[in-house]
Figure 1 (cartoon, rainbow, N blue to C red):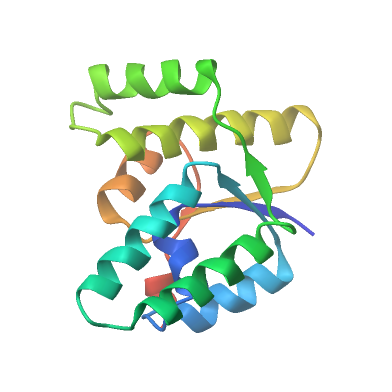
Figure 2: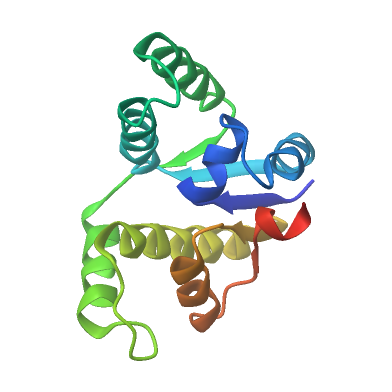
Length: 154
């Protein structure tokens, strides 16, 4: 079984009915899932925004977040560290092939880079970076990562 690194844009598809949700659920069942610790805040932010927009009420928001936290027990959650935030800052300052990299995207990219390096060094079978955010996907590709977008499967 290989392991994939998931950005929050793709991870959300496991909890919300969106284009690519079915593919995402199957992929998460058949491969191990690794995420950045920053996803905890990003998922909460996404749910709060969708609740404020009237997509669901606060009870549903809470239920989805609890289900997400329960799922993280089976995910590999890569903790933030001084090294990761320094790497993210370098990505923001330098950009990726001349593009502007958003702050949380830089954290996701730095975490994914570190995680893929670690899996290669451990001889683990690394999958791909699962990402539906197009600017983040493009940055990951520019950095040499293999990517897959759930939205391209439905």
